[in-house]
Length: 121
Image 1 (cartoon, rainbow, N blue to C red):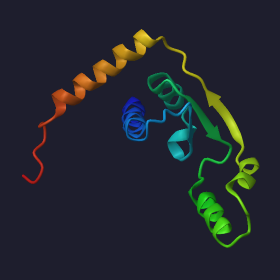
Image 2 (spheres, helix red, strand yellow):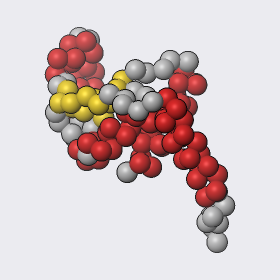
Image 3 (cartoon, helix red, strand yellow):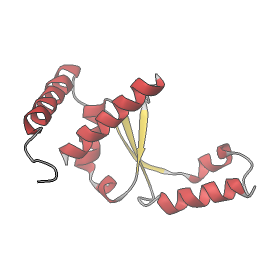
Image 4 (cartoon, rainbow, N blue to C red):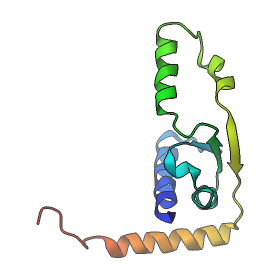
């Protein structure tokens, strides 16, 4: 489970570096989003508020939103804001020092694992 959270942090850091915009909140859905431990750890390691929607499977709903906007059913994405309901938020609970210690441990493990398996052999 922790590996998911660490990988999410890597994606968030890459996006932040690319866009120069650091998010304050990350909205999640999907089967893994039902796991409170995962979401709390994700909030802690990413230092972000993690928000879980009432509906865990938003892919189809999102496609419907995009289609509705495309055909003019809704005039603006702002009209969709009230349709998404947050079931629970997870706030970071660990110190910056603890977060850095965990992150450095993860990075060390990733470095050690490189080259472990040869691709194509």
